[in-house]
Image (tube, rainbow, N blue to C red; front, side, top):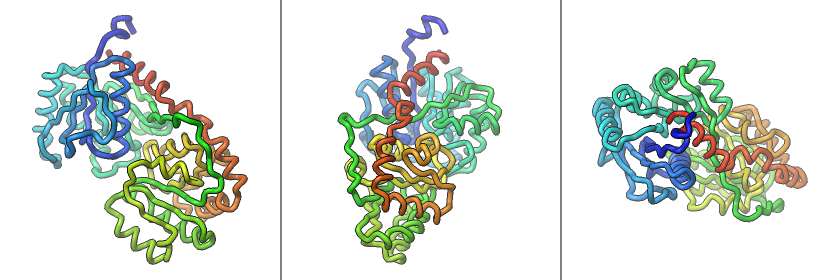
Length: 369
């Protein structure tokens, strides 16, 4: 890499579905984009397919310009040629050097633009290679990215191995974790708490149906404990019915979307995750940073790169509800074990430090300049 490339100010654009949404991908995207401006003085833009809200749901540096391809919400693969044409016009008008697809499905629009303009494309994987949520043609876009993108960024080392094994990529595959910030003051773990916290969208991916099944083997034995689920989604009615059928409505609470998850993490005894699959679960990182013991399914991908089994939490084989419930019961009944896990919770946290993450992003961008 030449000194000119190292010092060159790049115009980097993040391509998103809707950057104003309140989900993990948007939160990480806005944070990385802001850090590129603040720490590395790049010119940064964000272009969304459309925006449903006037403001970003997460803090965004004021130097970042926001753009949309459509003035209203649009869906459907039949719009492909029109979307490609609009993205092409944006890249040319704004003189974009590097386009980062904040969802791999967007590669279907950006890769044709690369063929015409030569813009560099980074495909940023937020799920994992083996999962195809929402649309089955993610399988196709991942294959295309492996052959035609300039780089693929995965959230975990395990997923990078999946790409190498299944896609045989012609471009670099780089693992860059999502960042997490430690609280500004040392965290005090409350080992006397009787609150279990879980969080995520109320969708099949997050496995809250299995959580309820596990709770049937936990909460009746511990009537002075509560288990709260933070998040909203399409399965609320179904999950509510399951909770009522199990007669757990006084102990297992669906609290919906909360303004600050830290409020609940700060008074929790442990954090529990029952996802069927993940990319890199940010809620586990947040729980880890708050020194919470964790019980999690060892799903593909992410938990095994966050939780050290039997050191700061338990990793349970996916869908083994009986064992899962027994581990939660063990922590409920063993205050000393909870305290021990809490004391080791920050093991490995430096891998997710924002400075470490941004150095990795900057190195990747410099190599592409």
